Image (cartoon, rainbow, N blue to C red; front, side, top):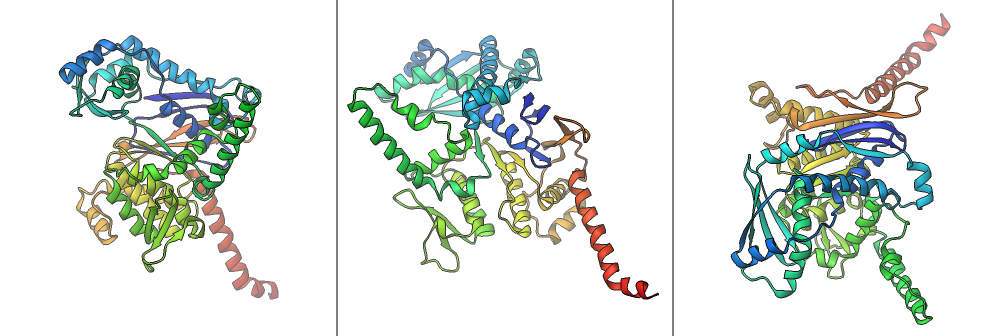
Length: 463
């Protein structure tokens, strides 16, 4: 699925392919990488409601299995409505007022690059199996390659009466959303503000309580008000930050679920954090250092690397699902160069476990390591495998050339007013980000000139 956007802030035009296993965004500050990431998150997050299919639910409840022919016309309409919802709700996405949004994003547009026929053909050709979680019911959705029919099967032995209404209301929407965003399951975002979300989540709790008190007073005075709108539909935070805060508010419940990637999160803790991130019974993030296991630190007393990566650890331990798209804005924040390299390798392992990654970075260390991981994918060559062994790379730390898409956000020239998003070629030895290479080369040249001036300049002056 390829998406084209136009007139999004500084971005004049850009096309990205969401089907790639790893997507890397590079470019100068202020060129729209975060904006683009937010828009992709909003698109994949949108779960639109369509009319339920009572006949399908009855067939499923009575026989525990059911079949459904894909309605491609309705699916195409659903996809278009997803785009429309992002454009319409751009004020909520960026946490700004509607008047401001109209001024800043009046010309913002989104569209699919593929035609409806191409997208329908892609869906027809895929083979998929997903489990839909609808309230307390798990429904397995299966499709064989080349067929236009879905098979559904209830996994629960018993379906409680209170869950039947949920199936009637949500099942059809869940099916169409699954097909519309394939091959992605869900999108989860880790914005640059992630190092503060857990630290200040309690402050948000206080504001919620104060808001409820104010609402109650207004109700007592006979004023009609929508409590939900006041609490959650405010314009204080952009949507990714708001969603992160809501996760932080629900940690006590989230803790009860253990994802299939829990052990991977523990390895991330061992290799990067040297300790354990844990959730208290009260829903607070704590940290236990490996060198002082009896010590339990509240999140606000931990090192910056722990604040930055704790949300990713919690996600992998308790929320993550196969084929999720993980959006990380500047993963290098607060990381020493050696840890940036370790994180790049860990991200490659995540991609090879079935996740999809969308990463925006300014780090030369991460870019270089991604290049190494692309070259490492050619480990069928004995010489490459020898280097991998000597450098202690793990078996699944590689990125296939065809699984990586790299985009550069930049102005065409010094007089250009809009950013153009350009796809960077990925060769068997990786890719180049010239804007970073030029800075490094220029700095090296200055350092070399200063060194020789310092070392030999006085002798030249005397002569």
